Amino acid sequence: MDGKPYIAQRPKRADGRRNYDAILAAARKAFEGAGADASLEDIASQAGVAIGTLYRHFPTRASLVEAATRDGLENLVAHAERLAAGPDPLDALITWMREAVVHFSTFRGLVGILAQSMYDEGTPSHTMCSAMHRGGADLLRAAQAAGRVRPDLTPDELFDLLSGAAWVREQATPDRDGSARFLELVLEGITTRD
Amino acid sequence: MDGKPYIAQRPKRADGRRNYDAILAAARKAFEGAGADASLEDIASQAGVAIGTLYRHFPTRASLVEAATRDGLENLVAHAERLAAGPDPLDALITWMREAVVHFSTFRGLVGILAQSMYDEGTPSHTMCSAMHRGGADLLRAAQAAGRVRPDLTPDELFDLLSGAAWVREQATPDRDGSARFLELVLEGITTRD
DNA sequence: GATTCAAGCTGAGGCATCCTCAGGATGTCA
DNA sequence: TGACATCCTGAGGATGCCTCAGCTTGAATC
Image (cartoon, rainbow over all chains, first blue to last red; front, top):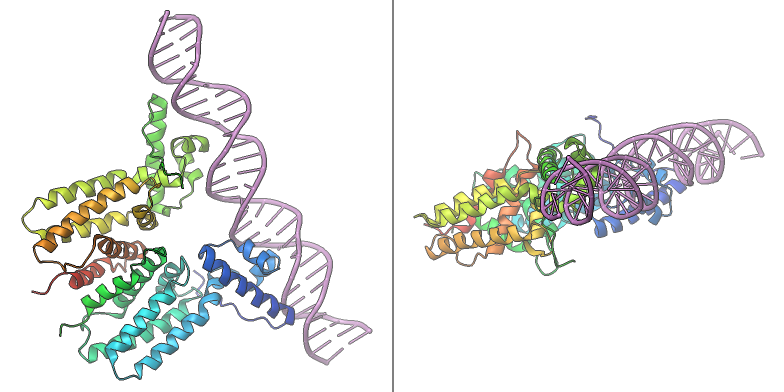
C-alpha cells in the first residue's frame, strides 16, 4: 500500500531504548503464549508502559512481529550460508529445511505473516523474507546441481512446502505433531530416486 | 470443554426458518469475502436481523461456520463413497484429495477450524470431520491394498498433507496458487515407485 | 375467530481491543 | 542551566463480541 515499509528502529534516548527492549521482551513472551494476535494492550502493560508508547515504537502489529522474530530469521539466513559451504548439498538442504520449519512456527500465526511478507513488499518482514528466499534458493540450486533434488522444483515451491509443514506444526498439540513426518514425506517427493 | 457440541438445527417456526436461512446465506457470503473471522454483526445486519437473533440460532462462531460448510463437506463424504466403488483405487484417492483441498479452503481460516475439529470432540464440526476422516481413510486403505501408496502412511498423516495443501491454497493470490503443484509433489512422495 | 404461550426477536449495554492524539515529562546537548 | 527534540501518557472514539430483559408473534387449541 505504502511502498515504504516501516521497520522499527532502536530509539536513541535512554528511556526510549529501555522501553523498546521491554516491549520486545513482553511481546516475545505474549506471542509465544497467545500467538501473533496477542493483545497489544496486554503487551504494553506487561512491559510497564502505556499503550501509546508501544505504538510509538511499533506502529503496526506487523512491525512488532518483525522485530520480535528478526534475530531468529537472521540466524536462519546465516546458517544457510554456512551450510552452503559444506560438502553435502542435499544434507545441507535438508538440515536447513528442518530448521526453517521450526523457525516459521515459533508461535501461532507467524507462518501466515511470513508467507504474506514473502511476496508483499511494503511489509516489515519482507526484507528478511527475501534474504531467506535467497538463502533457501541457493541451497536448493546446489542440491539440484548435484543431481539430488528434482530439477523442476522452484524456490517458490520449496517455500510453499516449508510453509505447509510449519503450518502443520503450528496446529500441533504436544501429543500430535506431524510436522516432522510431513517433511519426511515431502522430501520423499522432491529428492531424486537413487 | 463441554462434551456436547452444539449443532445448529433449522428452527420450527416460519419466521425462525426464514431468519436462519437468511443468516446462513449472509454468512456464506461474508466468510467468502472476509474469511472465517468476518464480523458477526455485519452478517446479522446483511441478513436483516438483530445480532441477538444470530446468536439465538448460532451460539458460537464455530457453529455458524459448521452450518455454512456442512453441505460441501457432506458432498465430499458422499463422493468418497462413490469413488470407493470405482475400479482404480489410486485414481480415486487422488481425485478425492484434489477435491478435499478445494473444500478445505472454501474461505480463509476454514482449514484451521477443520484441523482442530478433527481431533477435538466438543466442536460443532467434529462429526462431519470424523466422517471425512473415515472416507479418506477408506480410500487410502484401498490404494495401499492395491500397492499404489506407501503402506506406512496413516490417515492422520494424509490429512496433515491435505491440510497443508489447503492452507497454501488459502494463502494464494490469483496470480500465485501453488496448491496444485503442492499436491502433485506430495503425491510424488506417497505413491509407490513404478 | 379468540386465546394462549412457547418460540422467536430486538437492541441497549458491558466488556475487550484497536489505534490516535493533544498535552505533559524528560533525556541530552550545548 | 536552559532549550528542545524525543518520548511518554492515557483518555476517548470506533469496532466487535456476547448477554439478557422485555417485547412480539406464529401456531396449536378450543
